[in-house]
Image (cartoon, rainbow, N blue to C red; front, side):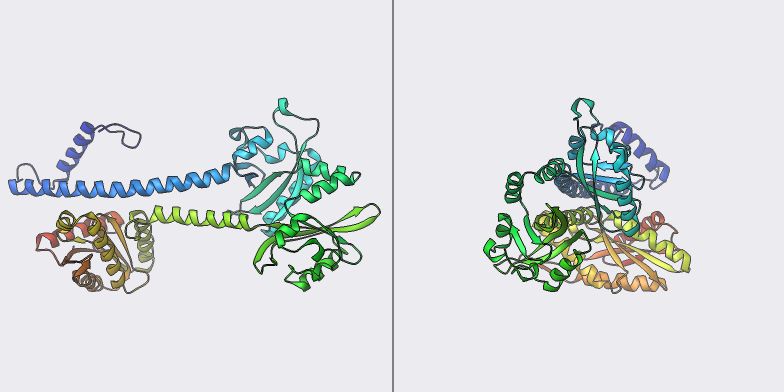
Length: 491
């Protein structure tokens, strides 16, 4: 056996320890072991080895799938066009993607543990602190703009860079997540545009989001950029000269009118998920925000419309990948049943409840009688389908929603009955499962008759923890096998 980090013991050392444990268990003393006993042990060890190999293959496949999905998620996170940060309440950086270290000219390893506020221009700290306070108090989306000093002196410029921070709390109440967008060029451009209409027009026309300019007094659209026609399908002639609530792609006319009226007293309004209708009839969700600005001596209103379809798709994709990872980590990939890890969590919870309520619970282990010949004669593909149908029938046999069944590997399954009144309840359920599994199977033209043997252990009579219950249920299963199979035995 080659040594590696997951198995620090060599083959000889592992064998020596295993032999010592076997002798210490007193299972079959050497002086009493008959040739038949030795032959049986060799047979059981061979079967167990094959089961472990099959289970290891399935686990390796599941692990590879998790690694693949993790790599995709990491790439989306690390190489996003915007920076991502996770901050504690005191602005300590807990996580940052690779885009951040390029923006700040600082390696990610140096960022973790540092105070994000320490990178800001001192005058912008009140704005940032106010935003953080609102995020943690209201649990809503907040944003602000701050200026950041370069960490690397060799790359420092004469002026600090300006960034937009969009913040929202995470699942943890002590953390929040920020998107970190470099808007330095845009900010400087906007300042310059006040005195350069030609440059402003170039940026206006080339912007990759829809822009509407409204007359402050009437609410009529006096200008629109070409991208709005591309985004919504309406020509500029169909947009310009109309009031905001009259244009074709606005679905909620009352909301549009109220927005304009509110901007008579407010300087900024934002809708994060506003439905608009493309000229083709398709409804799309956009981020819609309006703000009042001064143009010469007059006020004007600018409305920006940003398609967030891709952003929502990425969020949905991330959600689905997390669900897949969780499914692979807690469930058997062949049958979809809970695996040993999830079973252990449920057993621990059940036993804790039983202790509080002075109640009983049952743990049953069963496997198929003579399953190996099915694999040997019909092939592993048929064997896998059989296991899936056995799992399905076992689930059907369970009457209560709180009862659960898990697959340990191979053809071995465990049933947990978290609340029973008497041992007879567990025996009745075990018999129901046994009879359900005994019914003939038809798989790809083959009729298969197979039975199962079931061992039952009950809390607290047969053990007060998971380890002893599993051990005693397994011993009862072994007795059922020795007594002729296709039966239920209680420890």
